[in-house]
Length: 237
Image 1 (tube, helix red, strand yellow):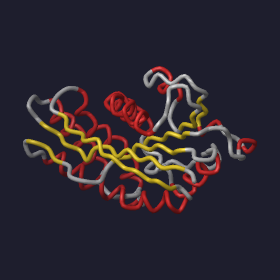
Image 2 (cartoon, rainbow, N blue to C red; image 1 turned 45 degrees about the horizontal axis):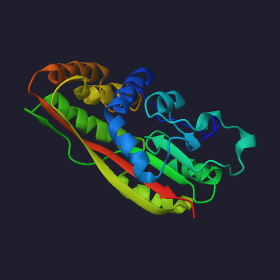
Image 3 (cartoon, one colour; image 1 turned 90 degrees about the vertical axis):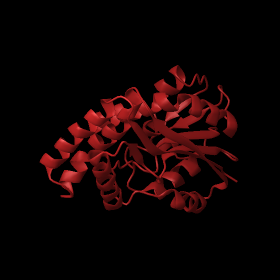
Image 4 (cartoon, helix red, strand yellow; image 1 turned 180 degrees about the vertical axis):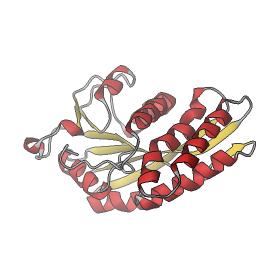
């Protein structure tokens, strides 16, 4: 996506950055395994929707990395890049179909797109938490209001963009202790502004729920289970 074409769904930027960093650290072993399974070698050239600093420093990639936001009109022709990686790319832009088509045009023949996306499945907490369950309800409303894509549509979106040989695998997310349980509260914090602007909830209620959710996460022996991450890869013909 060029800067002119990228159109992020309105999320709280500070909370979203902390959420993305937390998830990047949690997912690091799974992401490295994903790259290997999809055939990405450390010295391959890569287009990326995320920071190339993380890919170099944490994923240990040594090839040429070009962030999609850095691309300009002169980069429109198919390049020698054989891979493109995006994390939450389909769920953070207003027009994921257009974004996939742009990636398709920039990859070389037989090039692959690699995606990590939030799942849509069972979310639970133990013991029962009113704040957590209210967060789930509001998060669903926010996703529906913004037309965010469900996994069932990703396969179709990739096919429509021209990709073939589509594969999907799932990385579960169950947190018992530590800062990893903050995934729920950071996700909630990142959508609060959007919920208020869409008039889906009262601001006072949202901030009270956020504090209650943070308190629940900090308690020992509580469990939070999220849908996990789907890793998707597909090829150009």
